[in-house]
Image (cartoon, rainbow, N blue to C red; front, side, top):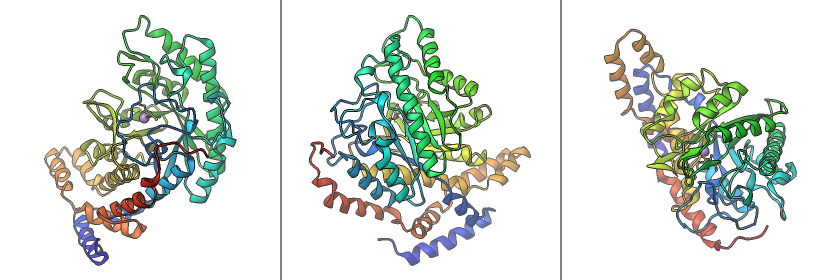
Length: 427
Ligand SMILES: C[C@H](O)[C@H](O)[C@@H](O)C(=O)CO
Ligand SMILES: [Mn+2]
């Protein structure tokens, strides 16, 4: 257990060190408090959803691990999320997928409505947690050949267009209820395992389907449409219809939010370097902060160089108002609440490090052509006492300091998640 007095004393020393570097720690903490991370619901149940048809995960998504105690219904998922939020400093959002509605019987995806998300909306109001949303274009019989909105079958396309329209209306209702835009992110898995004969035709169909979905303008203070590209998936190794170039062009030409997922590019390609380019041409970005290991493996976000670079880019470019930060990982080999806590705390810690940089100073050095001092100061940043400021931030936010949160998860595991059987429980 961390000692509160030591935490405060370490913080005061850290403030002096940052001040000596020209950094205003109070100002950084003020900005930090306004950073909202959209926590993804799907880490809590291995992307299963609550449609109750026992269908398996498909369309290029794979979750590995069999740690006991996944959430089996919305109440369990909400309970697990509340536990996770209690370990994370600040006020954050929830990113909900359409397959997580409360359906009380078979409701196909083209027929979902706001009523199926009323429970989530009530919960979000009570918890003061804003919602984001996603249509679910996977794990469904009408996506079993790997094609949805880009299908050559007009009936299949229409089904998924109707799903997209239904999801936009749900997202707009969520945004109206919460008083801020619900980001509605479209990830469409369509693609071929092997070399296509026409790369063009599916892309024309995808653009046409999306145009039909987005035909009705919805108030931007209620919902913002985002589109997410991908390089390849399991089973779509040779060709993904919604590639980076496809969605970059689509987002620019249709004034949409572009979603960049850290696991959706070549292994050595980083999204941190795309942020400033994309924001020259699209109004806003959504990030899916993830961690690919050799492929888009959706590992829990660690405090990696790329995570730090992503947050540095957001801060150095002054993009905090134009970049929405969401998470996208799913690991079933460790406790799922711990996965949320580790990944979200790391994302926030990296944001704090970026906010504690002497940005004006290093950018001035760069303008002056003093690249030696620029590198020297950037390197000094790496051993500044970030941990002391982070611990203070956690303590004052009323969440566990250091690794103390792990005991909370252990207690929750003993009292709650370990008592769940592996069999789904009906609502
Ligand atoms: C479940 C999510 O929508 C999904 O992970 C998507 O965002 C993605 O990244 C697919 O690879
Ligand atoms: Mn993603």
